[in-house]
Structure formats: structure tokens, C-alpha cells
Image (cartoon, rainbow, N blue to C red; front, side):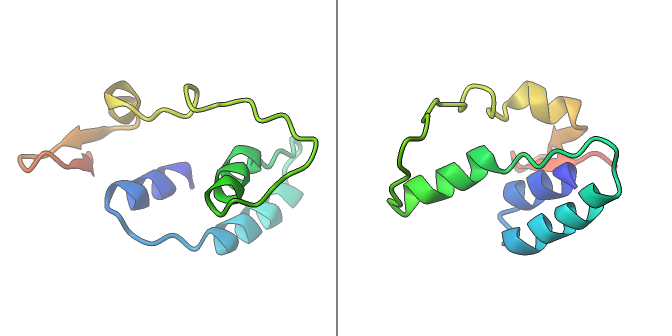
Length: 89
């Protein structure tokens, strides 16, 4: 699922975030370790739309969420001749 999302972002395809969240909720129900890491993503959306959250720790996680050349290479993406990141076949 993570590779699919990153692939959509690289190709600038629209993402139905609510659908993905619901699918993850359903899949998490069947897993032993239940974790839904949507906090930072939702916080970013709330900040973009200037939605005020009271009594929240707004620690920046941007350093940990960086997707750089090294990360994309580990995920088996390569730069094509046009300079765009594509999944390695």
C-alpha cells in the first residue's frame, strides 16, 4: 500500500485518502499489531486548511518524512531519461 501511495504522488495522480484509510482500518482489524499512522498526515491537512487544534504537541516530523533519492532507490524506483522517478520493472 505504501508503494502505491508514493507511486501516485510521484506520478501526480489523485489519491482517495478516505478510501485508503477505510481499507487500512479493515485490514488492521485482522492483524495482531494494530497501528494506524495517520496522525502526521491528518495534522498536515488540518494545518493546510487552518483548522485549530487545541492542546496539541506540534512537533515537526518533516525530517523523518523526507523522501529523498536514497529512499526512492531503496524502494526500487529509478530516474528515467526524462528525469522522472519510475518503478523499476
